[in-house]
Amino acid sequence: MGKYFGTDGFRGRANERLTAIHAFRVGRFLGRYFGRHKGGGRARIVVGKDTRLSSYMLEYALTAGATASGADVYLLHVTTTPSVSFVTRTEGFDCGVMISASHNPYYDNGIKLFGAGGEKLGEDILKLVEDYLDGGALPLATGEEVGRTVDFVAGRNRYLAYLLSLPRSSLRGMRVGLDCANGSAWALGRAVFDALGAQVVSIAAEPNGVNINQNCGSTHPAGLCALVKERALDVGFAFDGDGDRCVCADEKGELLDGDGILYVCARAMQKSGGLDGDRVVATVMSNAGLEKALARENISLIRTEVGDKLVCEEMEKSGAMLGGEPSGHIIFRKYAATGDGILTALRIAELVTESKCPLSYLKEGYRPLPRETRNVPAKNSAAALSSEAVKEAISRVEEGGGRVVVRASGTEPVVRILVEGEEMRLCAEGAAAIERAVLSAEEGI
Image (cartoon, rainbow, N blue to C red):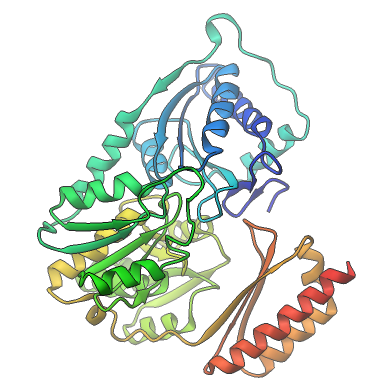
């Protein structure tokens, strides 16, 4: 991770860690950098944002910076992260920008950057952005070189049309629940399922700038599960704040996270011949139960470090057509260059319709192992994780048969702890022991 950009962009509390001045300077760099790569011509940059209060401030600041460097900026307004990736890739833009802090609370925000192919920008360019943020200087555009802004709602509509073109069958009559997290998917998600004929019941679809992800969405799916059960729906989907994640509830109201979705989709794609090489890419955070369940289907699991960007890179390298994370970032390489919550929901709904089987049946064969996860606040995660006490606590849990992943978050100032094993009690005890060691190390720093 860099000084500003973590595993999923530049993220932090709005106007504290991430300010309007940062956004302006990011825009200044992008406009100049991509203009120079066009031989001094105008860079074309497309920008989207989520529903949080500070997104407007950061959008306008970044746009001002980019146009001051001579770029033309096309505004998608409130939209999803995957739509920015799609429009960047299909409409010939030099880069794309999403203003969002994804699943974080409203008071945080972030800046995600995409290359011309719709992929997350590489570390080499991000390093140049960071160098400029730390005091670089660039000339201002003057006269006819000053950039323009363009209202580009049409781009969002083309993305919507693309999603509607993907399902092979109608969803007419299917009873679908949507938890839109009061975020980017609040309008697009319902529009897609309505157009395909589903009977939609939506919750958390009234964003007001401060309620994004608030006890709703993919990080708080209890409301969706209750909705599906109470309203006797066929299936339910919960998105996150910027719409690149999706988790599901089956017809019984039981949760299916990203690992479960990977299992269901991998089996279906293998059956149809779409799982090239019979391989799936996941991260170290994916449940060992997924690996075992896929192995029974003769499907191999390739693991990467955490981050959908790393999953995408490994998919490209290995030729895998399906990858994702337990959080609900699911990547269908045939259709998208990043995780797409609405696309994932459509694929699951389509499988339920075509198979004429409930989702609870399609997920049979997948049994996740018990696990305990904890997020421990840490101002200096790297120092805490390097302490001997933390290393010893991890070793003791591993010696007891547990699978342990302890890492510094790339999006928040916390240490994330995962302990997985055959008994929930042992997982909880192991995670608690590691948490105590991290807290003790943090106090001693």
